[in-house]
Image 1: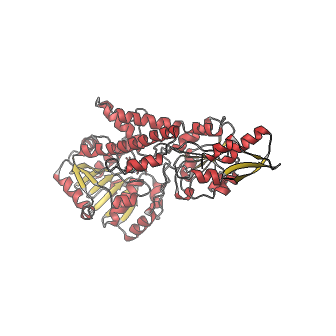
Image 2: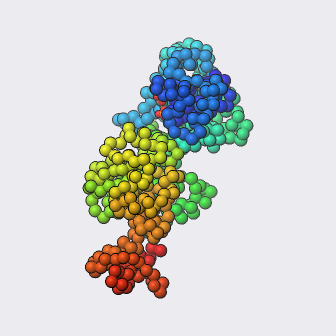
Image 3: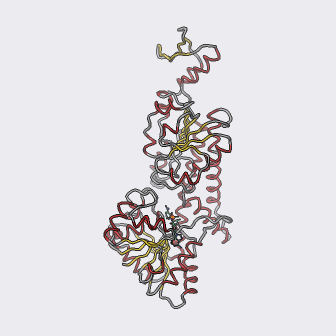
Length: 487
Ligand code: NAD
C-alpha cells in the first residue's frame, strides 16, 4: 500500500518505520523542517530503542521517505494516518485538536484519488465525524472516509509494541474502510494478535478509558504505599500478592512518584472534560487526577521530613529526570514538579539523567546538570531517585556516599535494598511504600554526642551491637537497640 503518516513524533515515526518494514511504501510528513532534514540523513531526534536502525534500513530500501510537503505526499495515497500531537488545551483541560484539524484540512485540499484518513492520535469521542465534516466542507466532492485506529504503544518499547500489540483496534463506520485496515493489519492478525473492530466512537473512547484505568491503578497503589509507610507494611509485598490475583494482574502496581508523561495526565483531563460536557460524573477519574497532582506537588515535603529541617540552601541531587525509564521524553515528568517545589523551598538542585538531559535543559532553569550520578551527588544533602533507569539501579554507593555531604536517599521508585544501604553504606533511606530507616551509627552517634563522646567504631559483642568510643568505654544504649530493630 501507499501510506502517508502525518507527524513524526514517537507514534508517527514508529508507525511509519514499522509499516515500511512490513513492505509498504511510506512517506512521513512533519512541519518541523529540522526534524525532517535530520530524518532524511537517518538521524532520529527522539530516543526510542531500535528506531534509528529501523529508520536507516528502510530509508536505504527506498520504502521510507520524509518530507515537509504534505500536498505532494498525500496526492496519490491509499491511507493517511494522522499522528500529530493532541496536548492538553491551556484553559479547560480538553484535548487541543488544532494540530489534528489542520492536518485533516491540509489533507482534504491535497487529495486527488480515493483515500482513507485514519486518526492514530488520541482524540475525543466524535472527532472522526468532526474531521469528516471539516474535510467535506473543504473538498465536497472528494472520495475519502475517516476511521479511528488508536495507538497503545509505550515509549521505550514502541517498536515491539507496534509489531506485537495486545490488540489492534479499528473503528470504522463503513465496510470499505474496515476491509482496507483489515488488509493492512493482516500480518499481525496472522501472527495471532487479536483485532477488535468497533464503531469510530467506541475506538476513540476506548483509548481514553484504557489510559484512565491505568492511571487509576497507579494512583491506587500509590495511595496504598502511603498507608504502608504509616503502618510499617511493605508495598512491594502487597503489590506482589495483589498482582497474583488474575482478576487484578501485576502490571501498573509499582508505587512511585505519581504518573506523568505525555499521555496519562492529558488523557485523563480530556476524558473528564468529555464527561462533563455530557453531564456524566466520572468521580474515580476526578479523584485519580486530584490524588496524583497532590502526590507530585508534595514530593518535596518528604525531603523536608528526612532532612529534619528547612530545605533552604540544601543541595538536592535528582537522579533520573524523564517520566519513566527507556525514553528521553520529559513531558509531564514528575521530576519537573519536584524540582520546582525544591527550588521554591530555597534548595539548590543538581540533576542527572542517562538520556533526558537534552530535553531537560530546555525545561529546567537554575539546575546544575551533571555528566554522571557521582558528579551529581557532589556536596548533596540528599539524593532523590526519580526514574528507575537500569544504570541508576546499580550504583557504587561507597563512591556516591563519599561525594555527598550527608548520606540521605529518597528512593521514589522502590529499587534499592534498604537494609544494604542503611547497614552497609550508612545511608538514611526512605523507599516509597516503606517506613524510613536510619543507619545504626547515626542513632548511636547522636546518643554519644549527647553524652559528650566522640565515637570511633561500632563493635558486636555477645550478639549485641555495642558502641566503642575512643576511650574504649563500651556503652549499650537505647539508640543502639533502635538501630538493631532495623536489621
Ligand atoms: P509528538 O508531539 O511527539 O509528535 C507530534 C509531531 O507532529 C511533531 O513532530 C509535530 O511537529 C508534528 N505536527 C504537528 N502538526 C503537524 C501538521 N499539521 N503536519 C505535519 N506534522 C505536524 O506526539 P506523539 O507523542 O507521537 O503523540 C502523537 C499522538 O499519539 C498524540 O495524540 C498522543 O496522545 C498519541 N499517543 C502517544 C503515545 C506516546 O507514547 N507518545 C502513545 C499512544 C498514543
